[in-house]
Length: 201
Ligand code: C5P
Image (tube, rainbow, N blue to C red; front, side):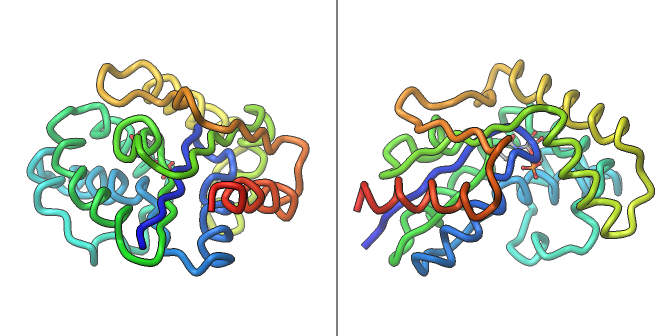
């Protein structure tokens, strides 16, 4: 039976970690929808137009190794503002959301646009400082040479662009449960999310 958990929020708030661990806990599939926009943005850096890149996207492209860089993140947030790019990616996300056995999708517009009927909607946030610090540790740990200030600037720019766009802007669904992870450990954030899923099952 289909059961959808929609997790939205700004960059580096902990959505991905919560989504992955909730999916593992319940045996659900997990789709990091940011990867769709990152893979599309990545291919525009090679010269494709954003709409061509989105329409040509294949599941294999989501496994590319270099999708996590801040340069690709910026390209993702630029292509994500284009309505035709978003439209080209809707069917894949909705099919994933309704797969048998349950699904967790994390992104910016899952609870508002992609799966407004999701059984559980979470809106995950954390303070700017904490998000930047966490992402800085993650990126430097993977060998990226980047300062804390540059990470903070990347997150703020993307959040501003993602919130201001006309199509599917970053915002909480009216019926989303808000989860501020600033003062929570990963275990506490995941436990809070699991409690919400259990309450809806
Ligand atoms: O979540 P992540 O940081 O990987 O997303 C990269 C970019 O993709 C975001 O800044 C946003 O512009 C875009 N995105 C989106 N809608 C989603 C997921 C990501 O617009 N559902």
